[in-house]
Length: 76
Image (tube, rainbow, N blue to C red; front, top):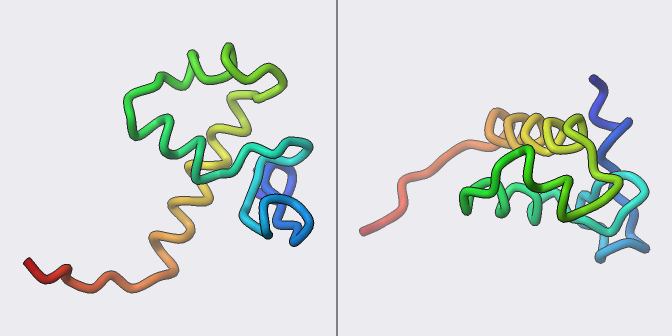
């Protein structure tokens, strides 16, 4: 699944944050919903037009970023 089919970055939409194509739903927002315990099945019921593939694309995007960026220890 090419990410570009689901995720777009446009400086005119949400100041250039990655969003689900055709919406103003930021990838980070979908990831926050998942991280807070929202189920993959429940999210589309609250956001009509959002698909399971869109949610999986958000996860794939997060995985891509985790692989691309180096992690540094956070001081205690």
